Length: 283
Ligand code: HPA
Image (cartoon, rainbow, N blue to C red):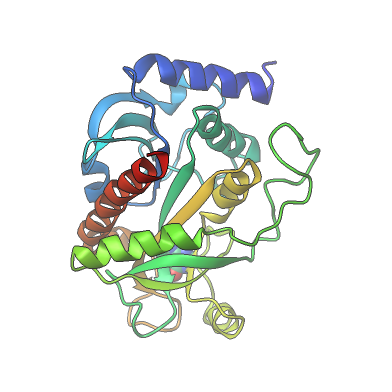
């Protein structure tokens, strides 16, 4: 059987072949139903995950399962259109392949988007929250098992999991587009059930601002191998027990539609600003 590291090298080589010389330093992981963010990309190539060794096939509506190469505002970017969640039963190896392939491709920063439930009055459906920190409530960690020291240390620090300077750049870029970003702590439950109202009260008590079923495994893997992370949550519903409607996947897709244009404006501005900043550092 092909080893994980072989799958990663093979996937990276296949992507490079299709990249027409583009060398993105940024990658975007797209959350549920965020089509307007996908539309930002002027596409050079699109590779189905099924053609990339070790990549998973998403099983959830709204997650296409393709790796895209292109530009946003003339800046080269990779898009992972379609994420997988631990509750789909894919196992962490597929997540490792996805994230470590980005590292092999010399990506420096991963922008992780998601759809989440809001726990505060201001975090209404359609609003956006830049992730300042997180709480992992799954009891799972993608780095359990033998550590491959070639990727990162056995005991990684989680300080700076979400890069402060890059988050500031994101918030400023969004403001310049007239888009307000809240900031807060993202909490991940394993899912696929939404939370009970009692669980939401607990999350609020321990300092959570938004809840979802993704993002933290990707962040842990990306930080482990030395990539920076920026996180942006589209608030698609009020968390369980707080709203008029029960959280549902349909509501997630409706809420994502409310947030997607503002998310696209914020990310477009961030990607341009990131490029300018990197160019000035190189000068
Ligand atoms: N809880 C967990 N995951 C979610 C929610 C929620 O309220 N909304 C969208 N994804």
